[in-house]
Figure 1 (tube, protein in one colour):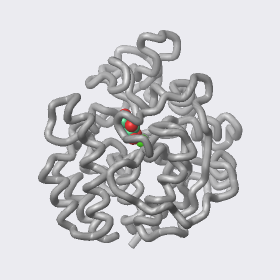
Figure 2: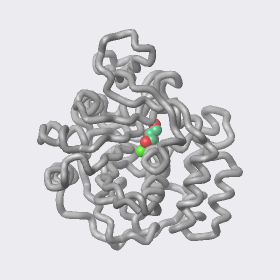
Figure 3: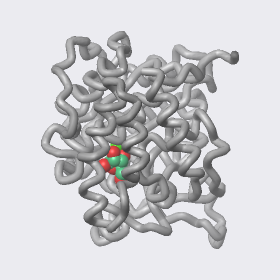
Length: 313
Ligand code: BDR
Ligand code: CA
């Protein structure tokens, strides 16, 4: 088997972030060399704590978790307790983590690791606002040539927005950071709402996870049942979109996804449409293609992969 791919997960757990972390830790093809927490769904003090709770749930307390930016680059922090609950990880009752938080700042870890590792060998997986990633790129411009690629959850075009009528949460919370990342020249794969809204946690899929009968299976089912209630009421669907695990699934089985190389730009000027991702899907501008914008998913294949991997924990 080929050597495991080195990844850094940048995250704001968040139940769907938690499932993404579990999927990565369960997968032998991936080597999670660090998890960097950022403020997003809930404040930083909770996202770093939740990241450690998840590593312990996975039985991987040796995983290195770092704390990063406590607010976006320019705008004030906007959180999403109405979706994720007061803790950010409402649903299961998980114990306080015993594993330590690393002493280094997440941005220092990103810079030092990406300079130390062989160029082109580390993939970044941002699952929250892009603050930590943008700060690292601004601080050390050589990183742009060293990151293998960035596979991120964020944006929306055909589906428009989920936090404002036109903006998706991760990009809306720190649009300036998203702008830095999208203009960085690093190869980018984007998992927007256009694809994640096709990955629904239907009752049959959640039952299959609960029926694994393991501690992880039951905890994930409890997380998903809490998480989906908000979107089920909003969209009238059976289940809610399981956004962040799409990033990890793409690394494991890219054939489950399809999309198009496009230019993606972020609105920074208008308060009305702040953080909107403007996707040149039809190639009507001469702006350079800067992202593989994913639009479709084999959702049954995705949930089969997720359930099979969660069973390994
Ligand atoms: C994104 O926002 C967060 O609430 C989720 O964790 C996901 O990363 C979806 O818009
Ligand atoms: Ca997230």
